[in-house]
Amino acid sequence: MSESKTLLLLKPRGFCAGVVRAIDIVRIALEAFGPPIYVRKEIVHNRFVVEELQHKGAIFVDSVDEVPQGERVIYSAHGVSPEVRENSKLRKLRVIDATCPLVTKVHVEAVKFAKEGYSLILIGHRDHDEVIGTLGEAPAVTQVVGSPEEVGSVTVPDPNRVAYLTQTTLSLDETRDIITALRKKFPNIKGPAAQDICYATENRQVAVKHVASDADLLLVVGSDNSSNSKRLVEVARALRTEAHLIDNDRDIRPEWLTGVKTVALTAGASAPEHLVEQVMKYLATQGFDNVQELEIMPENVRFGLPPEIVEAIASAPVSAAVES
Image (tube, rainbow, N blue to C red):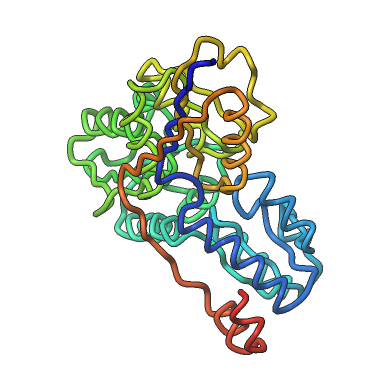
């Protein structure tokens, strides 16, 4: 009889409050107003979520210039720059904003620091949708830094008037190293009143750290363009635990499981739970049937819906409103 192997199922995992809110906004908009509903960029960084919403009638575009004049457009959870908002006004688009409230917080901080005459250092990945949107709030005074090494080349008009902000989905450890380098170079640098890295990103990274030494392998369900999912892999590897990012169960290579007795499984903040369940089923066929769910910390955050969606629910027939 084959030896039972262990699957450590991490909790919290998967959808965060901002992702739930963004997906709900698209679904409710499609039900209330009917297709087509245009969405600027991927509503969240997961291709399965995007494909599901496309089947329901959502049309994803890279620019508001692709949206016919006067139509409805939803901004993704990652936020947009003031330039995008202005272009939407010029095209008379009916905007529904699905920006995560935690991203909005960073935008507000950027505007505040810029108005107070600070040079801004935005810690993050230059090509990420969230960073592009935040950078657009004060492009003339903002520089993006992605590593401690890049801090060396930063120059500012007044070293005593510098502030930093961060992308919400970064690695806690990597960000800490960059902030340390910035404080060394600019001793009077200011930061946000509360950290910008979101609660869900932090919680999932803490959970990975908690089990890294107990697992032979960590599997992270999430798409390759999901920043927070990729950071989970990096966190595990930094602790010398083998780790891989997978879109779904079909990405698992049999050789990864050779000699492995314990697999830890988690999911990035934009990965749906049904993909986790598929991975669990596959692992069960490979002998990982001793499933232990480990709740590292409770997570009960919820965000309210934007007024356009609240009004749509209020005016919908009772049965439809209850269903949504």
